[in-house]
Image 1 (cartoon, helix red, strand yellow):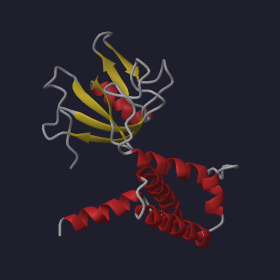
Image 2: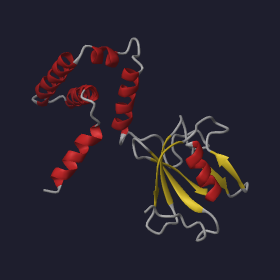
Image 3: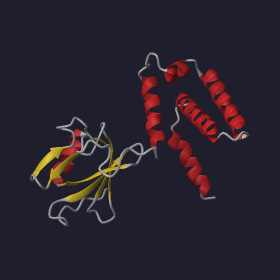
Image 4: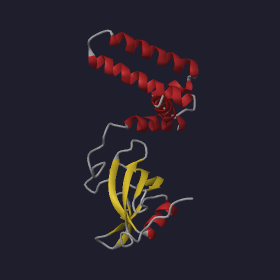
Length: 198
């Protein structure tokens, strides 16, 4: 049974933490009343209640940087929300990506995975990623193998920048391979998580 949100504890309002649905970066904090919450679910765009203006506002109505709803979680006391969303270019009114700090590289790999998928799904012309994907599994697997060998070679030398570059190349091509196999990086992450319990 789904938990009900307790709006009464906060005089009709609950705090809402907005988190990037792909990278998990915290983007902002806002407040919702029941109406804002219902509108968020109905429209699929995060809508807040402005305490200073005493009115509802959908994030992005002015800037165009909407927060597209992905998931909602209610905390254990039922008086706070965690919303996962996909943001536009910037979430903060200052133009920054996040109200807490600029865009972080931690978790970016999931954003990259989505970019790879978008290029392939759109059959994007002049895209290296899409061109490689269209060549099929043999060419993709061969490229992953080549990048792995190059990484091993660089591991035996002392140039750490070249090593990091080859590691990035391998990971990028691995993501293309996962897409071809219709798998997500999160599936692999889940296996590693389960193994960590052993």
